[in-house]
Length: 124
Image (spheres, one colour):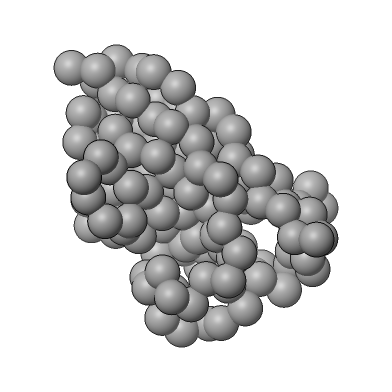
């Protein structure tokens, strides 16, 4: 049984930082590209960041580029999202997800496993 479990969310002030973690089990972690998505209240789920299987290449949404950093530790079956200089518009539930595919990684449809999400609230 595949499980992705996010943690690290919470309440933070504008300009603050948080580090999200996503622990994976039940799948060959190093064989999967991993991604982070988020869903703000009343909005659709959107792509945030992704990282290749080896961790050698990362990609980001324009809205978080330069502020967020995705990383992974294949020995620990964990992917991270370091979020700095947080803004109120970053408030959302953050989800990690896995995909066996190389391409289309900004699309929700290519990700086959999802975590339950962790809530991030940025106060102004």
